[in-house]
Amino acid sequence: AERTVSRQTTNLMKLVYGNSTLIKTTSINEEDSSGDEESDGDDFFRPKGEGNKKLSEGLDDGNFNIEDCSKFTSYTNLKDWKEDKLIQNIRDRFVTGDWSKAAQRNQ
Amino acid sequence: MGKTTYKRLQGSQSLRQRLLLATLSSTPILVEDIRADETWPGLRPHEVSFLRLLEKLCDDCVVEINETGTKLKYKPGIVMGGRNLVHDCGISRSIGYFLEPLLLLGLFAKKPLSIRLKGITNDSKDPSIDTFQSTTLRILRRFGVPSEGLQLRIESRGAPPHGGGEVVLAIPTVQSINAITWTDEGMVKRIRGVTFSTRVSPQFENTMTYSARGIFNCLLPDVHIASDHKSGPQAGKSPGYGISLVAETTSGCFISADTAVSYVLREETAQFEDQDNELSPPEDVGKQIASVLLGEIEQGGVVDSTHQGLLFLLCALCPPDISKVRVGKLSPYGMETLRNIRDFLGVKFVIKPDPSTGTVLLTCMGCGLRNLSRKVS
Image (cartoon, chains in turn yellow, orange):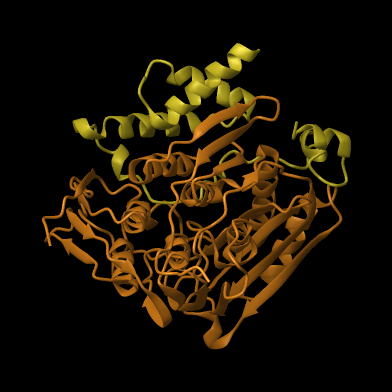
């Protein structure tokens, strides 16, 4: 487990700061599986990382005139938060949930 | 004076942040190929407006734009600040677009800044004015910005497309901000919010509040959503309504989500085209934003995805000391910010995923930016 963690670290660093295109796909997958399954993120993340990396070489455009927006909300695949299963997932993030479980997040 | 060497950049992406970081780090920049291949080439009205704002705030700064607006030369000056400034933000982007960089510029200005900004207060693209009040300013306080003199007042609201809103922002100056370790998300103890409506029935607000509450009902009883119906001159020039929610945690984190609904200009191209002219019903708006907020909470982190950029910038601008923060999934804007920080300030974050919670931990050493014009007392 220790090794996977360190590998993920380098992948995230690479995803942000660039320097190798090969490992990028895996790092995206890992990110997704550990977080929530918003698949629309994939196509969005990749070109930007690459675009930035190749900046000095004169890149394939389109990527580098991206809209300047801090807000990142996609309304297309919003979850239905009335579903019981989803609510159980985040129950412990509220004071009405299990406090000991919430405390574990910070270990 | 000797010859100035410019840092060469390309494209229109994160122009706002580049100008901000160029100013803070006193790096002259030369940006080329700004939308050179597009039907409407060059700088957009809001970008030009932001440059004008920089000229207003700074002494000795030089802005040169070529005829088509595809090339920009910017030599930063000294951020002066000052009282009773006025800036018209125009109507191509909302006031939030200008506030994001302005907050940081104000902190490192020579004199405390107070400025009246005119334009759009709430839209769907930028963080709304209510979110700045409820969340953004509190994030600044976390980094040691004093709350005296830090204020954002809404004089009137303005929805797109014609705006007509006015806000007054006051920012104190700081000598430097504090490095922090901020990884405890805590548990959500209350949800607050505010709805607004301009030139439509106040009943719209009740409907949004009701449907938003419906989502939170089974999770938390402590939900209070205020309403702010504006009428007459305070309602700006266009009809619109919207909602801003914030979840407050036991460890003092504020997670926000907001949106606004309004009509769009028909004749405008590009930036307005992907919305139709039918307004989405207030019922859906309330429900959507409540769902977005729960999504942000589920994702984790000490700030929401919108505030990642600001959080990273604050960490990077700290004195040379270690800052450690936790965010949910990295947002595209957050990643872009990390790259810009590296390019201008030379600060590189150590980014480490935390697989057990699906969050990401970021650690950095601040670049040690000091406000030289503010003497130690």
